[in-house]
Every structure is written in structure tokens, then in C-alpha cells.
Length: 131
Image 1 (cartoon, rainbow, N blue to C red):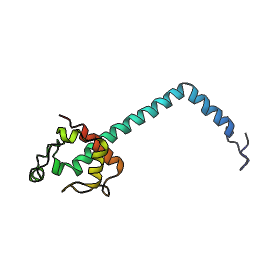
Image 2: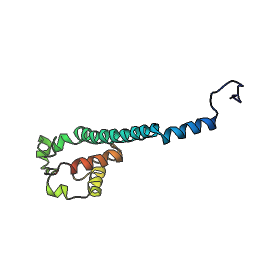
Image 3: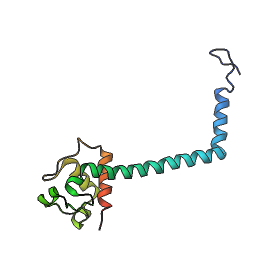
Image 4: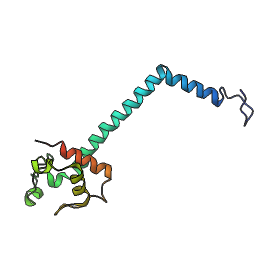
């Protein structure tokens, strides 16, 4: 086939490439492509979950402790309750999101320091600390 811009050979026209792509997606190549997309999504979720744990360690553990028990020197001085306590665990995702975003009492606001996705990750992490 002739390349209209340069007059040379291109191998396949755009229509021919499109047909080749469609055959690939319908056949075994499509199954591989779907599996690759699924694998990518799963790895992203795992990275996101690990990211929330890392965010917690970096931003929260100084006061709340590694396990959320509030057993650090700062946590004890502030008389923090455990994040695994019924009082904290009974709060909705939205309530925890607002507390992390705006701060509460002596806890600073994190709306300028963390993205909304990071804050949502922290909320899920806090709920994972159930007793």
C-alpha cells in the first residue's frame, strides 16, 4: 500500500490495521489483553492499599502509634483513644474523612497535606484496625 504523505510503502492502511486490531481483541490475543488489564488493576489496588499503610506510618503513627493504639508519648499526653475502639470504629467513612480533612481538637487538618484519595485510603486503613 502506498503512504499518501510520502509515497512509500506502509504495510497496512489504517483500515487494515483496525481490522487486525479487532481480530486480535476477539481471539486469544484479546484474552491475553483482558488478563493484562485485570492484572494491572489488581496490582494498582494492592499498591493503593500498601500506599494507605505507608501514608498512615508517615503521617499518623507519631501520635496514634503503629497499631493505632495511641500508645506513643504524644498519644498518651493527648489521651488519644485507640483507633480500634468501638467509638472510632462506629464512625462512618464520611465522619472519619471529615475529621482527617479538617482536623479535630489538637489533631491538625490534612486537607492541604494529603490528596482526597490518600485520605480515603486512611479511612479504609483505620477501619481495618478493628479489634
